[in-house]
Image (cartoon, rainbow, N blue to C red; front, side, top):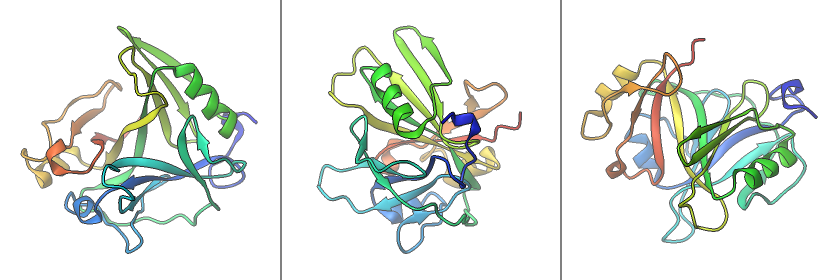
Length: 218
């Protein structure tokens, strides 16, 4: 199965949601609509906010996949294999439309990339060197979530872990004005040509790194 031959939402791999341990009210406070069951609906991959099981749980703790064979984890990252969800969306005050990508930290890009490929059929698309850091990129399904794997020489936590996520918004300046400078950084040029990005400040308490980015209009 080649990733580019798979249509999202039919018979191919799709990340239905990222599971995030945290407080739904904190996510609502940044202008995201959270349903009673903790789901933040977005085009494509959504977010599912769950209460922490342990006191030290915070941030992204797993992901829900449809269209793959049953597995409990991918490179040590917990997986829920679920039925393909009916597409849904909510009107978010933040102007959020979808998830651009999720970032995974590891000491071995090859190990994590091979595990993603084996589980989803979506091969590594490209890599990029940034000094001692190596980044690798998968796209899960046609037009689906980008998985950015970051190999860092100083990473020594054993298995891979989720590091953060990036949310696309309709109007980055409006989103930053809604949040205010005490909760989000000034927008700046992103690595992706023609796009801009701003980072939610850690004191907001989302439990994971979150950035907001303009749409990819290429």
